[in-house]
Image 1: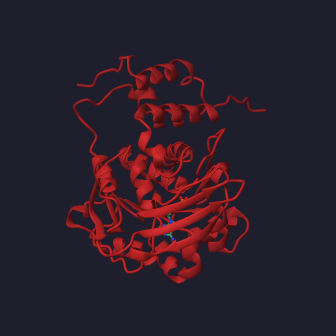
Image 2: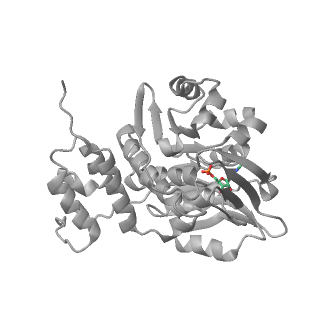
Image 3: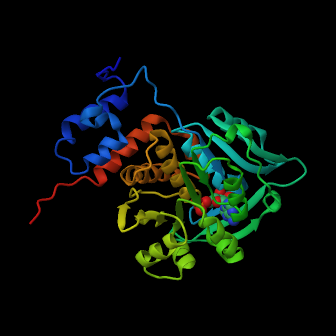
Length: 361
Ligand code: AMP
């Protein structure tokens, strides 16, 4: 039976209550409120207690790493990092995950156990006992938006040949986090059925050493995510609008250009959507913010099973909200602490950030 939610004890429902009364009727962004909090949409003020929505299978591919980070505010020794790690910590807030990666014998078992406890299936993570885990080191400039890579030691990544387990063949959403482009492609090729949506992230490092390989992989995906300087490097265009057109001609139907503290742009054909980043008083460590954004974006799409452009707009807001947590502490620390209530409260802040009334002149 469908039950109307009236329990005001939980924070989520009390937020829902506030939104219903204060914002829903007059807010021009009610698509956003209604889709971030589906229960806010007037025709969805119900909880599907008996017909639990079926969860789509999300496969995540990406580096699992040790990072050493230097920011103007502090320095970390080797801490746990990697694109796949950040994506998994973030997206596991929304949906179970099947992870594909590789680590060395030096990668702590406790880290793998912590991910398993979060609902991350590690059958696709190879452990090379006699080899070392991928290592990356970076130093941020004063603006905290730009950084220099100080060291990249591929180690186990150098000869990594991913094997997609049979139990991952039900993959409906595929998130190719930053990794060797040929490895990302190999995962697509091993899947017997094409997923509903393939998203790919990459970085300037691969543009510098493997541009042709990278372009071959880009041609096979539905959505590419890059930051603004990578979009310019990949396209050879300074204007981001021209860069987006050029990149979409390479294959992807959708493109997200991340602009750090200045938000993110979503392109699809002639359509463009912009979402701001939450203005934060303190940014401690931006490492992994892009991967966390990707985890929130695909986590929301997999959870809602809706890959429309409208729902991607909401997914961008969810990704931006999750990234705003990531930067608050070093490494994955903050992502490990946050609760559903924290996420709901942050999403509500985003709704406020973009909520305004306008009279057309
Ligand atoms: P982001 O700050 O979102 O660009 O991601 C930072 C993460 O990417 C770090 O945790 C690194 O371990 C990982 N990373 C850095 N360089 C590479 C690379 N070439 N391939 C795969 N992962 C990388």
